[in-house]
Figure: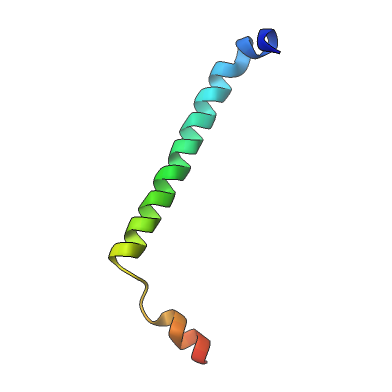
Length: 49
């Protein structure tokens, strides 16, 4: 497996690393935004309707 992986693992590893980093950054950003500025009462209004 290592012989076959050594050929094209760099591109895939870099792509997976970048994708994983972006997912983590997006999740952290969404968490911080929701913590700083919580969503307005739209959810409550929808549930009552």
